[in-house]
Image 1 (cartoon, rainbow, N blue to C red):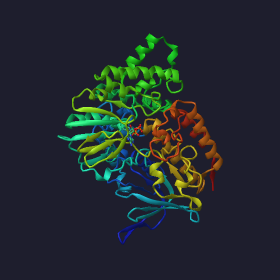
Image 2 (cartoon, rainbow, N blue to C red):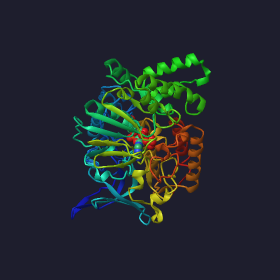
Image 3 (cartoon, protein in one colour):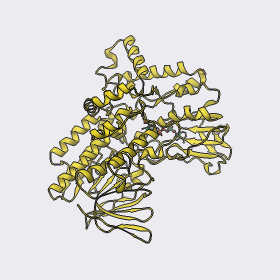
Image 4 (cartoon, protein in one colour):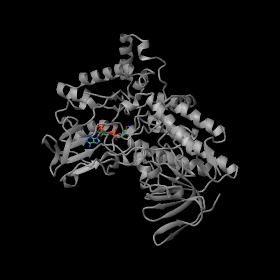
Length: 547
Ligand code: NAP
């Protein structure tokens, strides 16, 4: 293990030796990657984190109603029996404050914070070919040198505030859900506009409506949603989880999406229409992402998917009292779950409140923001005091391409990914030796229960580094032909699903003007992906070049 001194000079910090690794980000991925490299391999590691605490996406997303859609007992690390036994989740789905408490509990229990530099946003990371090291510089000018650069920046960490003309003139306050003020926002007595009806907007609207004097939801693309059916966990269930975690872990690792339940082994047209309706009703009652697991062909057969879509659109019409509002909400143009399927607590019911209105900005787009509020193309104006942007993220690539990453021969990551992200296994980019991207594009990542995908990546990266150290190998880089083959495989796999039919989805980069339209996550399922990664490792890291 290298001993690294850091010196402060002129307000700057500079490592005087070469660290084994710099990890960027202290969310689920960065914390486990630090633990794995430092405590298992004995390496010198520095984590750099822009926030002043751990938590990653959960540090920033403090909007009203923020809660994970994965069930609590599966939204956690599974690598440590001690962590599993010593933590208690309170509800079926973990709320943002509880996830923050959990990640702080993990960071404290594993004594991780001493190797995390908070308030340190990376401005540049440059590969030095002569020395085979990465030089990482923070916005404040602190400098770090390391053999390995590991990005653990999450997939949804660069907030997207759409460039709507006039925002700077708005006289009220505005917020993006992904950069929510720590002190919260008091909506009482306020007229609020919420733009966006993705997973975030669907969680936020019912909570905002409770305290705002009026809420107007601006919806561009209608969305399906299934009731989460959140509630407290019973002591019996919590004990069941502790006693049966080996089996729960086995299920999470063997399913497509890394959740603690299996996808039913039946096709939509294996059953009669009456039986199907009964299955959908039962799945609706169970709630949450389990609805998607009702049949195995929902994401591969459009006709099969149409039956789920019809069921869900009818539910909207049943719940929402005003027929006109119901039709705007139910006019859904994409297959169910081809975009990330939201789950909710009283979302559609919220439109039955007297203080809530829905505006269809697909039919009449937002043209500008005025000092008083929001103006549509037709000239209609909506005076408001607060605007909430629930408008999502420059997902999967946005944070990586903004980090000033420069590989061999000065190639920037932005240049390498000009036509969309290209890498091998979602783990390594050709031209960027010794750099690993935890849950990078091209890996199952956002299509999964994230901690399961993260653990698989962290363990694979850790094993790869251990393999190299045991053999005195100093450099690993994805071969160009491996990248070509992997990108082709991801595209072919996506083409065999209904995902590309949601042409406006952020999975395709379609939510960011000018972003290349490439299906970014790997849709072949986590179990299949794990098998591919394991085989690559077993064959001496086939497709990578060691030197
Ligand atoms: P999102 O899914 O990208 O949704 C953004 C919303 O804003 C969409 O309705 C979008 O409409 C709308 N929008 C964007 N720009 C607009 C504009 N200029 N005018 C009008 N509408 C505009 O973002 P998100 O809801 O934050 O969710 C992102 C992802 O984060 C989710 O898919 C999920 O993976 C994750 N997430 C998870 C949880 C959880 O586990 N509980 C919660 C929240 C988020 P279009 O569809 O027309 O573009």
